[in-house]
Image 1 (cartoon, one colour):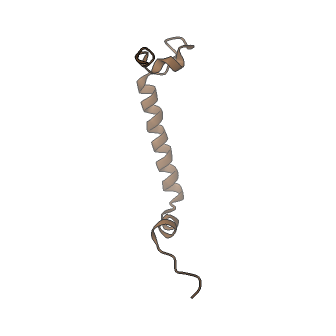
Image 2: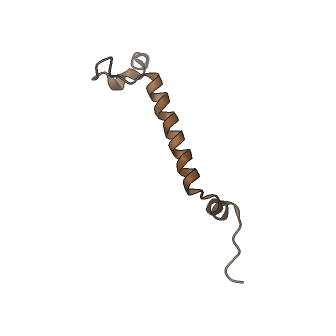
Image 3: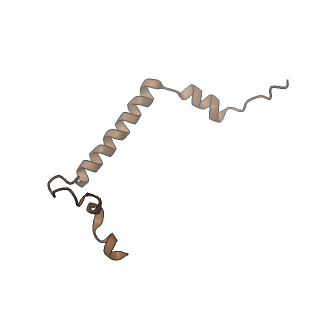
Length: 64
């Protein structure tokens, strides 16, 4: 098991040439852009009232 784990993360990309393999900074940049895109989408939609109504407020029973 340790022989497999010692290969690092490049085991998934061994079929690529070493210059074309994604580097750590590429993965960090992709994660950062993903967080940025998610934050921008949340800012544009702004579903905070819906989230508050759906998850945090108690609904009254409909029998009254």
